[in-house]
Image 1: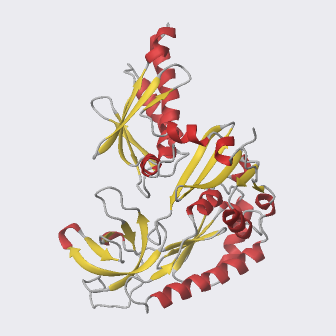
Image 2 (image 1 turned 60 degrees about the vertical axis):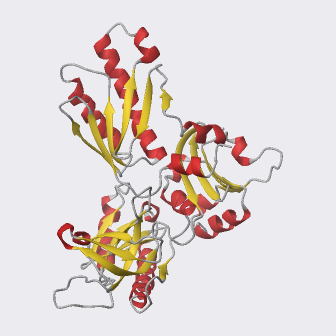
Image 3 (image 1 turned 180 degrees about the vertical axis):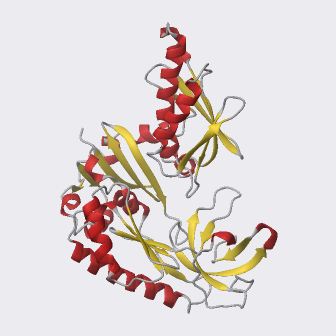
Length: 398
């Protein structure tokens, strides 16, 4: 079975999954909860400021006010100005949702507006700057783009050139960027004249973001059984012939698309606390209010090893790769504590370096250190609801 991205709807969600060699490589679940989704921009009303903690609470129309970290406000679009240049209670300000509300934690917002399309990410900023996707390595291309973009006189934004832009005609990119810049600037400037709670920018659906941000070179097909999703995909990628040619519509009524790719099994596996490894060892993932713990157990693998030191290290390496994969697939965030199998000598330092290497595949994940108790500490940035919670909440394993 070819490496494939599938997108389908179930129980008021849209599920997007990437499968490589029939193994789940990426997953996103878009719960249809209306306008209050990550990426959307609103006119917010500041109803409380906690000065000693340097944060504020902002009303955008949700049931509970959102959390705004004031010391992270690099660029502010507001209709209110004050001599001290600070935000005050009663001010209306444009904010973007950057974190979903999860459990007792309210949604997080930022005044640093970031608007994305297929080729660019525009970030509200005091000064213009240009950066490139880490996957763009061509120094000649970068130099040519820098020289051309300087002529555009873009003010108030930093620009990130996305991977999809590589290889396109630079003059065409210049025209596209300038048109995009003017439309985004007008949208935000006009937004400061709107009333509190107004939706200023509606981000594209999560399934489009997921496919847009994926490295589609790994996938041979993009398949959906939804006519609405098909139309959006073809429209979104109409200028990307290599991606457009991969998009297929699935019509078999006898064998549904999710069943063809065994999605029930893949989703249910993401809800289990025990994960078996190929060596016979296993992981146990447990969640608490404060953190996530992961325990590595030799289990059946321990009986096969004669060189215990090397054997344990090999198991820990295998476990480390799978831990990074599970954190990404399950969208686990916050503090993560991993109890690897006890090792002696310099093996723990070697493992720490290997985990840092594995973590490069996930830009939200950071390897912190090994504690005095021999536990490895990781942190992962929270942005949206954990996948396991969504699977359970919307009965996606049924």
